[in-house]
Length: 131
Image 1 (tube, rainbow, N blue to C red):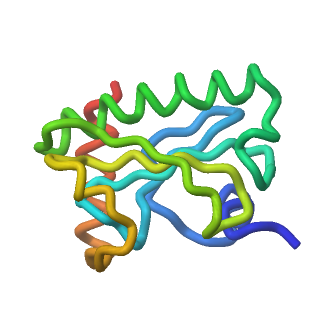
Image 2: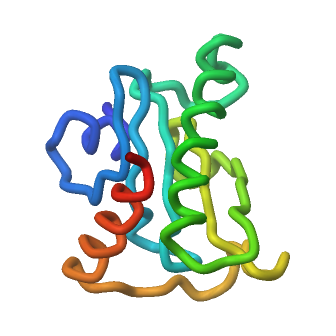
């Protein structure tokens, strides 16, 4: 059965897209730790990030870097934290999280809630920083 991320890639489930190419997709997390919390995924469905072929993993990180720099320009923060947990969805993915302190990346914290209109505005502000 396809992962929820594969269904997002296929367009079966909507998302707030930030960036995309033939191999990767970046979109806003719908249960974010911070405004601008973005997920970066390979389009190839692979459960564990270390099962990705070396070049695909390297290219994923380079793609995430470009997206992260756009998030950093759009969302006031000290840095963009990057983490891979890999337990919540069986599809390799990287979290890019605007942070001001190390505790901002604590996944046990309550998640934020934004309306679809707010998420759309956030996504657009990040996309404009990528061009």
